[in-house]
Picture: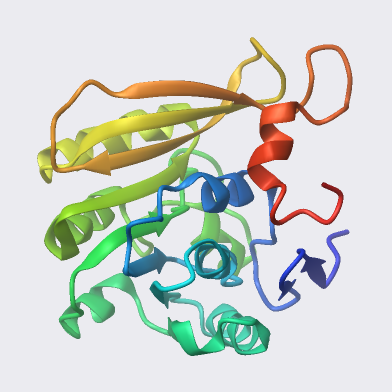
Length: 240
């Protein structure tokens, strides 16, 4: 059973009111996204507020906005942000992405999203967990996310998305239709040479050759964490 909290080196995520708990792949997204040059960052579907807080830790001057449709999750994300060292730079909006777009926010330098992705599997009887994990007519769609990013990114802005490989192929098509193209791809896998688990893909408006890089979580023949994984999460995980 998941604990009611997850403690990082500089902040704690309370998660008992959120359907989706802290997970390894989301932490990889938060640690790997290129945020150094960003001044305004948006986390779409923030859940616990994890990505917004990781971004705030990594970029000491940027301001973070985060949207979350589910009211209980939004409230918990706001509480997590308020208890963090960056409370003055993180703002949580309890809104759908469409409702947030209607507020006409200023453009963002970087948008982060770990969107619903189980497009063809059975939906959970837990409505909140379904909203967080399953793409459906009543949840955030890939097309909606891509269109929002194309509208609200700065000219040199970037969108970084976490998805399993088959769903990422679908999202890449939607992004291309919106005028956003793959700039780089981090391929998360259990160990070197194993089947890819997730793609952390960065999109920009420039159509260039995309760079791909594997990231094994574990070493080849053991359960020990790999050196690249440890290096990436060193500023966050207590164990590192």
